[in-house]
Image (cartoon, rainbow, N blue to C red; front, side):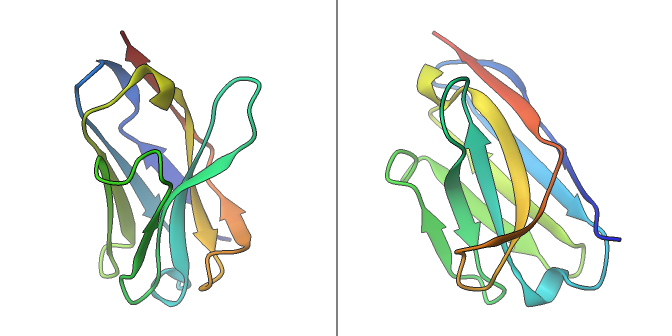
Amino acid sequence: QVQLVESGGGLVQAGGSLRLSCAASGNFFSANAMGWFRQAPGKQRELVAGITSGGKTNFADSVRGRFTISRDNHKNTVLLQMNSLKPEDTAVYYCAVMMENMVGVLQWGQGTQVTVSS
């Protein structure tokens, strides 16, 4: 069974940085896109950043230039480096296995809380 385990969330002041890590089990990792989503209270879950199996990336406009996404297919991990954090980045962040076209989600992680104080 596929498992995704996120880590690295926490509390940070505005302008600070955090790095989220997602460790994946299973043999699917290198063949699928991976993504980071977030959901703030009262809002819909949204795609923050995605990366295809070949390393092509996609970012939400709200985080482009501040966040980077990377993956290590040997270690089955995907990282989200978040810089210049803003209070509006506060949300639960979810790692996800995605279809290669980054349209559909195949598996969700349990989520990790990121809180940015002003």
